[in-house]
Amino acid sequence: MGQFMCANPVIDTDTQQAVGCNSTRKVAVPCKPAPEIVCIPDKSIQPNASPCEFTGEEVGFYKEVECKWTNGYKFETSLLLSIFLGMFGIDRFYLGYPALGLLKFSTLGFFFLGQLIDVLLIATQTVKPSDGSDYVIDYYGAGLIKIMMNDDTVINNSDE
Image (cartoon, rainbow, N blue to C red):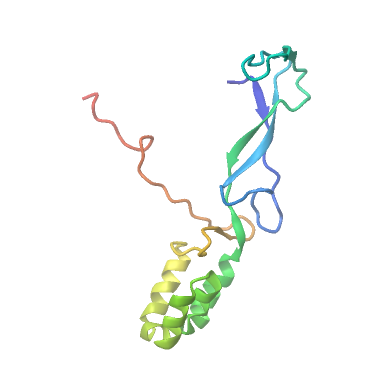
């Protein structure tokens, strides 16, 4: 800890997300080791490599950090399509769900009940584009992050 400094990812002004983020939801950022850090190469990988020393100015390695992958689907567009044209299934066609879009078109938005449900699902960002990407939300809008229970969030009562 404290032996290297990693840069922040470069942010794309159109998507408000990291440049180079892809469907793996990772982007590589350059990291610079602290001055006078000596690297000892692994002889099993590089038998002829010699130790090196960093000055703190050169990139020593790249670290992968998490990012939000967007594929061009705008949150505002999908929400407005759901509100105004949801009874015809246009919102589902836009998000890449043609079967549900056709069903909503055939039944006038499940008799308007499906339209109301879709407005709520899109507004809460429960329904996302079919390719698994996140929405493009302009100017750092209200993007949601789902918090799920895992080993880091569970309260351990075994100390009692």
